[in-house]
Amino acid sequence: MRYFDSHCHLNDEAVLERIDEEISLCREAGITAMICIGYDVASSRQAVALAERYDEIYAAVGVHPENIEGLTLDCLNEIKSLAIHPKVVAIGEIGLDYYWYRDPAVREAQKPWFVAQIKFANEIGLPVSIHAREATQDTYEILKENSVNAGAVLHCYSGSKEMMDQFLKLGLYFGFDGPITYKNAVTPKECVKHCPIDRLLVETDSPYLSPVPFRGKPNSPKNIPIIVEEMAKLREIDAEKMNSELWNNFSRLFRVKQ
Ligand code: NI
Image (cartoon, rainbow, N blue to C red; front, top):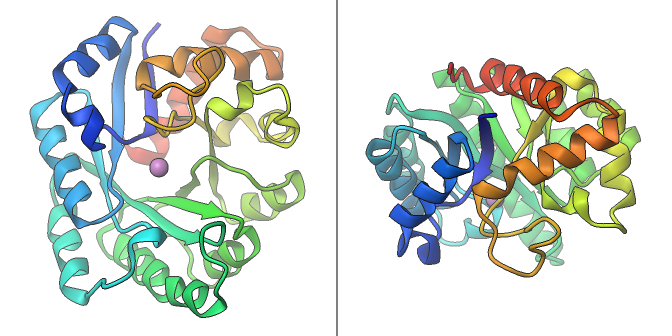
């Protein structure tokens, strides 16, 4: 079987040091498409450089809510100029992170950058990859006010089934990662079962969030088959069928044809 990873960070410094080895391991595992996600200007630039170098890598460019300190309009303009590259398939990851930021003023400051990047994605007709950590309700409010015209995925979805129903009304997709293989991940497992099959995506968020049995070790897109297997188990269908449904969703949202 061949697989995709809709959210990974091959642009992470530790991964970059051994990128050729990493890509050959992914090839051996049958991973034929990977979206390397930017989180600031430098990592977005790196994502595009990797996409130029390797056929199976696509890029997303954007500024993560953790990296908005000191952000300027010039930075956003650089993201815009990167986004016109033919292998850039999304704007991301962008969104809200309340886990690391308790100060209401800092939380508030994340919002205009999120909105600005959504508007920009709409202008150029790209979908959006969204990071929402402990900020589900505010993310929903922003998306309700600012529609994502070319679609969006809530990457590493960590909300409830009830919130999923709300996001579904906005036409969103939901990305699931290694944590669905953890015994105590009750809600994510429920969400995988609850989600309409045409809205599911699989991703690693590597080098983070390794699935069992690699929990605690650096993650890699080569672990995607483990996550697909778990999704198939949760949905009580065979892995091949699960994988082909996931491919349909991936191609539809990111317009990557394989
Ligand atoms: Ni990420």
